[in-house]
Amino acid sequence: MSAKRKEILVVLSSPSGGGKTTVCQKILKKHKTFVRSVSATTRSRRKGERQGRDYIFLTEEQFRGKIRKRQFVEWAWVHGHRYGTLKESVTKVKKQGKVAFFVLDVQGGMAMKRKYPQSVLIFLLPPSMSELKRRLVQRGTEETSEMKQRLKTGLREMNFWSKYDYVVINKSLSHTVKSVENIIESERLKSSRFDYARWRRGKGVT
Ligand code: 5GP
Image: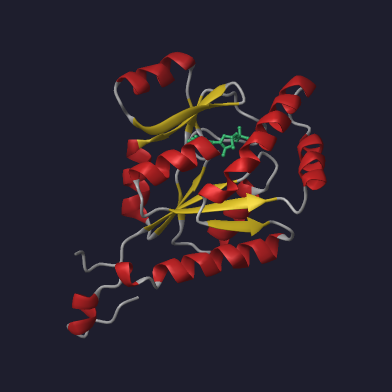
């Protein structure tokens, strides 16, 4: 039995337009010790996105090379592009912070649970189906055909809610952030993460 407070791997998923990126950004801003895993993707860079900060943007060839070399923990096709979590990203965030966020689609979420059963899976739901559709349409960063694809995928992804450990309805940003913070705090206090040996030595445990 390990006697250390282990790091917490938090997977945030939602149907496209569910707000997971915004929620993650807000939490990282509030908690400077929290970190986020940067995924690799073959999709092109959007305005304002930076290489290495938002994603590791790779060519199709580069991505396939990393698959061949087994460098991914998981990877998936999402909306016609490849997205994946690199093993080195997981190692990095595990080293860096006690709480590490993974903003993934449902395929990535399921893969993380298989590989890291201790990870905490949170599913963000929009307040209603009509709100989900509205957010997808409003996004406006893609061509109509791509948006239709996102809507279709989004509706399919909704069915995964029951496979997640927690479901949070993302009605207001501040409320959602609070809920995620509460989940992390509860997870942190789990007996399996308690450093009993350290506490016994009188070191105190954070
Ligand atoms: P976007 O292109 O809008 O940033 O992301 C599209 C979708 O890909 C989102 O649902 C996002 O969470 C997902 N995604 C981003 N990175 C990864 C990853 O590493 N693995 C998987 N499976 N999905 C990812």
